[in-house]
Length: 228
Image 1 (cartoon, rainbow, N blue to C red):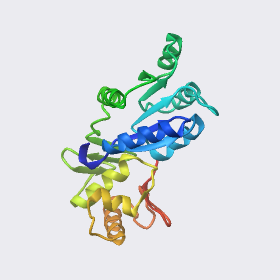
Image 2 (cartoon, one colour):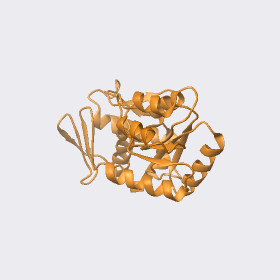
Image 3 (cartoon, one colour):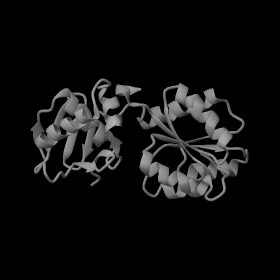
C-alpha cells in the first residue's frame, strides 16, 4: 500500500476455520489482518487495532452482525462489508440501512472478497492515506512534509517526520519501539534509537518536553499520540 502502511482488515466471524482462511489469504496479499469471534469482541478490537475496513458475518452468538453494526455506527464510519449466508433481501436491506457499505453472500470466493474490499476502500478514500493529518493542534502535511504545532511551523528530520506521522495517524494507539523501528525502516537500529528520536521530537513539538502533551510514553510498552 502507500508509504509502507498496510491496510488493516478486521474479520468478524464465529467460525475459526473461516477466520483462518480469510486471514491467511489476506496476509499473503499484504494486508494486516486482525480477527474477532463475535460482535462484542469486535467492538473492543476496533478500538485497539483501528482497522481500515471490517468484514462482518451476520449470524453470530453473543452479539450478531446487525447488533455490532448498530453499536459501531454510533461513533465510527469505518467501512463494513457484511457476509451473509441468507439470501433474503430483507437481511441485506437491514444491513445496508444500519450502515453497511456492501454485502457478500456465502459461499464466496476470496478473490471476490478482495475485489469488494478494494472497491469499498477506493470509494471511501481509505486506500490512500490522507495527505493532511490533523490531531489536536498538530497538522502534518505528508505531501510537502510540513508540520505545524499550534500554528507554528516545526522543522523535523525525515526520521522525526516519519515517527510523528505514524503516531499521529492513529491517536490513542500504542506503538511498541519495535513497531516504530519497522515503520521507520531502521532495521539495523536498536530500540534506544526510537527513544532518541522521541526525545528530539518532543524538544521540537512539545510546549514542555518534561510534561508531554502530544507524545505519551506508555511505560514498558512504547509510545502513543495522545487522543484529544
